[in-house]
Length: 299
Image (tube, rainbow, N blue to C red; front, side, top):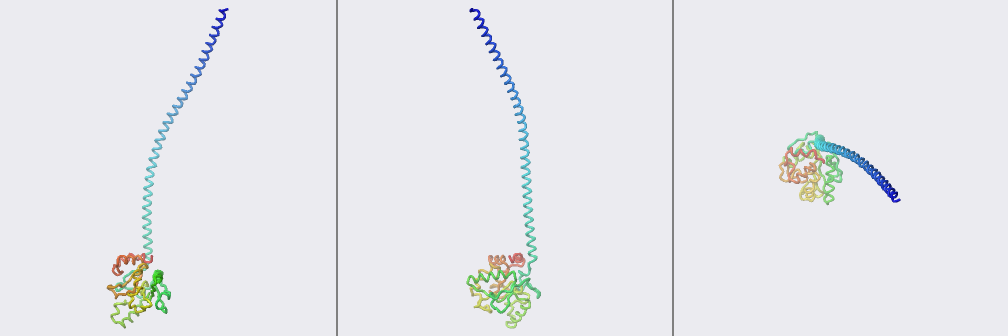
């Protein structure tokens, strides 16, 4: 009986041992397969990593190459932009020069010439356009006075601004033709003889023929001009006329005519301003220096 139990026990034990071995082998075999599978996946992954690494190197090299090309292209583009901008500046300068030359070609060169006993205007010279001065601005309301049309707006501003400051200035002479100047000079010569040459220009030498020059007076002074230099009108003109482009042609000490505080000529705001700042007179400058202002005379 005991022997059977022992055999049975050994049989069970053997069975369990075999079962354990089979199960263990099965687990081992399964794990071995998993390890092999993982190793295969690891190998594939390593191959991919190596491929990716190689590709990354290629991409990095390509990127570096493209960056170099981009930098070079950027430099070339900046150089071209600089060339274009320089060319544009040159074109702008040429265009400006052409515009100024065109403007100068359409500007009467006589307007800034030094006529008092220097240059001559012939009997056919008449300003391009003349405007009749309204009677409220003139001393003799029964006479017609004319001024160069481009000068009139400046002259009107001068007269109106002076009146706003409480100073009433009237015009007693403006444009005179060659013939009018000849008749005027003859009448002066009858009265004053050769002394007329000290204050009256011969025909063709008068600034009045340009249509840019006026004689001012006040109701107190009248047509004789006597004492005009002592008026508030003259003081106002000395302080302000240059702002409107007008200059005193014959100040004290000039070498052309007697002192004429009433005689004012339009030369343009730029030239008048420079003469005022430098305390120079119009006839102190040489003609070449004066001519540089001609293109801007009506600006």
